[in-house]
Image 1: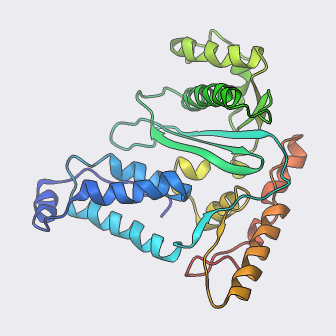
Image 2: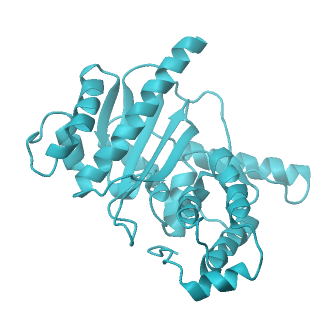
Amino acid sequence: MPNTHLQPTTPDDIAKFNSLNINFRSAVGSINYLSTATQPNLCFAVSSLYQILETPGFTQWQSFLHVLSYLKGTQYIGLSYVRNMKKEVIAYSDADCGNCSVTQRSVTGYLTTFHGCLFLWKTRKQQTVSLSTAEAEYKSLCDLNSKLLWLHQWCQEAGISDFHNPIIIFEDNHSCIKTATGNGNLNNKRMKHVNIQLHFVKEAIDAAHICLRYVPTPQMLADFLTKLVPKPKLVGSLVPLGVLWLGVRGNVDHLVENQDKSLAKRKEVTITPTTEPAHNKLCSKDSDIHFDQSGHNV
């Protein structure tokens, strides 16, 4: 549920869970594999469960079972890769400031598509407290920039020539973009202490390795990596990224028909990294895309 947070465990809660004799680490690790391999929609839930691995309680165990019930209805959802998509790298960077109710640390979330296909995503709690939303967004942007630089070098070594600069990064915070591009106040007292990260990103922009573009928050596709979002928002983010229904229900003809419908809907909301008005097409058909109780898009 949106705006739901795992609460700290209590001694009674821990004792009740210990009586079940369940390996909580192993259980969470099993769904972590899915979140890193084929189901990015699990990332935030898994990241939250990882915060209480040391002292899990019965309440946290119920939260884990809730994730399993979600998996039962979405077990046939996976990544799809389509030919003839645009040969470009597009990234989204987002952060939820002060997400953790205990430590007030923010959550970083970013994802990257290559040839229109999702292939890299990350959710993690930031190591230090951010004093502003812009700072939290900047930390996320810095992490993404590091990963993209590594990816670019790896592609060069592997002889992959489709990886072109600059890489477009969509960001939904105006202050973060203005500061990174040099149009903001670099001596702002709220940002002085992140100067190293600041100049690391600015250096990448000046070298034309990355290019920042603004996207409205409702159209930020990485939003589900930083917080629990409502179902329409989640589905509206997953479909353009190619996270579609891929399972068998009925005969083979039914499978082919449903895959064709899923791919058609995906092409309708294909990522268009041009001007802001063109990018607004991303969620123009979100209200027409739904999952039924079993996770099938109809």
